[in-house]
Length: 247
Length: 295
Image (tube, rainbow over all chains, first blue to last red):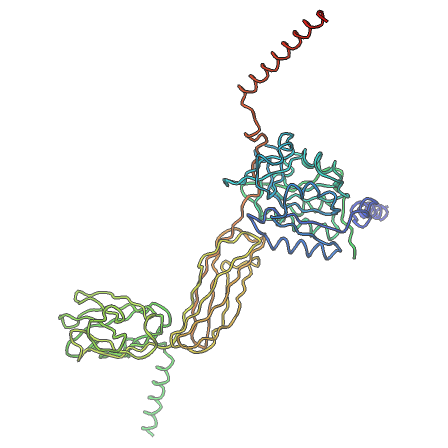
């Protein structure tokens, strides 16, 4: 009786935790990844870029790198149609003080540019720290209304501050076709954010589910005192998402 | 047999003395220490008749290495005035070249401490004097060949996951040879890596060479201050220099302004426009109503 119970319990755990049972959706995710690195204009992290690129390349992904100069409103507009299975958005983001969550581009703000988009709340003027230069930031409304194409079940990792302070941005990306959206729920320093991204990708590329990878990355990433930000994912029913390995 | 016994005792004394550390012999055998790129304390007491340190080791030969800093404690042993001068250009005891190229103290007593560095004096043998009693108070001052190592910049601010570089410049003063370079980080962490390119620098007398120190951090490097020590070694010569590294990280957040001022109408203006539009509408409707019966 005890043996039978143990066997049943073991089988249950195996079936529920074992990663290789990929869903049909998972199989269709392209082996193409992008690292959008607006933050490197202020916080360069070649270690992260090299590490993430190597990790993803090892499991069969090709990785496109977008440096600060490339991170424009137009890039975001066309991002869904570029066919990336994984996108790491290393962008500053707003939303820390109750303002709208916006992903900051490297495109300097100009009140005479994207006038209609400004009026419609698709883009906002974003300020980084005490800098006098401001940049265009794209809002959840931009993701819903201005982006072109659909994300092909993309796993989105948004490494900026408070990308999941609320679910507005996450919902918009999921509505645009992303399968799961991972981000921080509060302010993070670059080291926590980058360390977390590295650990998350390492975990997911070794067969771990999103929910496990998020917990492990949060626990092992450097901390950003006094903040206690945690990585979270959306939607909550996508904790079982795994990356397939082309090896 | 007795003679053999004396010989054995003498030999034993010699052997014991030979293994006693130098500093312990100081009181027995007066010696001017030989320092390397360090601050070297030397005491000289002036005696017009007997010379410098006449009561212990008259006019001792002073040997230093290029780039050493000499900290001279100068006093008068006979109560009369003296002045120390190192003839850095070998042209005699005159004070014309004082203080450069001839390092020289003020006249004493009272006792003073005079500090100078031999970085501008080429390796070689010179004479030090009392400018007031140059014939009796003079001795040899030997500057042995050496090299120095300097970092530029000496401080680096490096964000996590990034890197910084500092150029190490090695300068020879009479030194000829190859200097091997190595670096250490304190406090030690596997998340900081340092490289030196090249790791060995050949130097000719009077020449110089460079090596680039690269300090790389990861996102997992604890924030804070680190000291990277670069040490150059060639045979018995060894010199170090430090680069202070501060590992930083910034927030990656910003603030958004959803209604840029350029697109917002002031409340007063907006209200005025609304009233004008409303009144115009009412006027047009009334005008139309008036026109319809006429038609």
